[in-house]
Amino acid sequence: MNLKINNESFLYDAYGLVQAFYQGEKPKVFLNKELPEGEESVEIRVEHDKISMECNGEYSGDIAIDEADRSDTKNRLKRLIYEVLSKKVQISLPWGTLTGIRPTKIPLKKLMAGETEAEVQRYMKETYLCSDEKISLATNIAKRELSVMGEIGDKYALYIGIPFCPSICLYCSFSSYPMGLYQKKSDAYLDALMKEIAFAGEHFKHRTLDTIYIGGGTPSSLSASQLDRLLLAVEEHLDLSALREFTVEAGRPDSITEDKLRVLANHNIDRISVNPQTMHQKTLDLIGRFHTVEQIRESFSLARQISDEAKAQGKKGFFINMDLIVGLPGESKEDVAKTLAEVKKMKPDNLTVHSLAIKRSSRLNIQWENYENELFVNSKDIMEMVHEAAKEMGMSPYYMYRQKQISGNLENIGFAPEGKECLYNIEIMEELCDIVALGAGSACKKVGRNAEGSTDLKIKVERCENVKDVDLYIQRIDEMIERKRQLYL
Ligand code: SF4
Image (cartoon, rainbow, N blue to C red; front, side):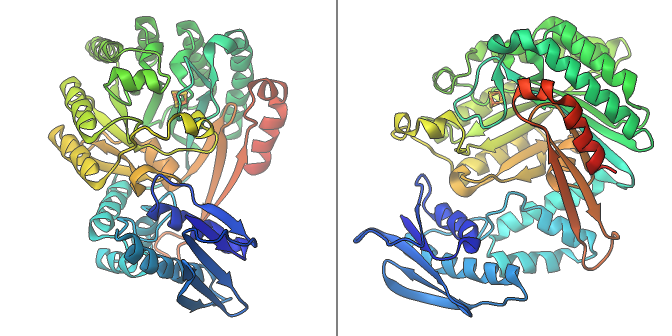
């Protein structure tokens, strides 16, 4: 499929929607360029007062441009594209014209502004043509988020990034480096991180630290003594007296050891993740995760055992989340069913299910010709099966987000029983409070909003990022700190 357009400001919205109809393809863009003859194409022409659309050379319709309301113009253009392509391709998209990454923000903002559930549902249906099922998923999640988050007040969340992993997964688009090659730099990295932690402790001493999330990368790529050093620094510099949650996303089973788990339990970490992604060895090998299915089971049961021992000693112990990915290369619906059955046997406390997204910077995208003949399957049926499995484990959806190029045009979704939700996941997705992010490649968010209950609730998010490269981060740590000081004046 080709997309021809003569105005870049509508390209992003048009492209996202055209691509959603042509799963597994990457539409070619012709920005102010002629289309090749005889190929399938969508052409969008922006004129001074209207936008017209043609599909395969035939006139499809037009919409008027409202200069005073650009967002309404874009919504109407997307509805026109949707109408034409849904007839042509003979499919409907569960999220309608919504191509943004945080669909729950729409009901959340509206509910916070005092609108009723029925008003929210009508708006999502008329404006974005979402299916009833997705509208109720997004609305129910938004209601749950509001009830677990409580008053935001002066709260902030702290993120600490450890950008090392045992190996780099095929689909990875994060700033992560193989620990084998970066081992020698990891202590210097921690030294720089300590400076940022000390800064955060001092700069935010009058604010309430609500949650901490140590992610990455794979934090458990660090040795047990490095983890201990990091957690001691957090305890020394930050006021943890009002902390509601402390997560270390251990992550990869091939990085989890008994001594590291004991360090986490001794520091009263209350959430970790043991992430299988799949319970099929052939897929693990294909996606570059050099561990076995058996190692997943062993790491999980070791984590459970150490958590139980910690609880018996009066410590917190941890909730254990598991991450899965559906739509992995070569995996059928039956493969996903088998993974879910295996996960159920382990009884995790939370389950997070991602729909594979093929990101530009990932090896999967860069070396696409090596994988394009693999099966890439994700569908409504598979997601229903996922919801059913989570329900059987006593869990329901509590946060959600979407990504560009997400398989099946579906979503990533976190499941938890009532009261076991990961608050940080909600905070980062919904941008409800400031996120102070430390470490290479991390991004701070400063969230400003007008009064809660306002009928025109506005949330403004300002950002500042740390450099991704580990060497540059270490060299330029003072500059990284200064960026934060300027953002949070
Ligand atoms: S574990 Fe996560 S961060 Fe590390 S390489 Fe794999 S996808 Fe990337």
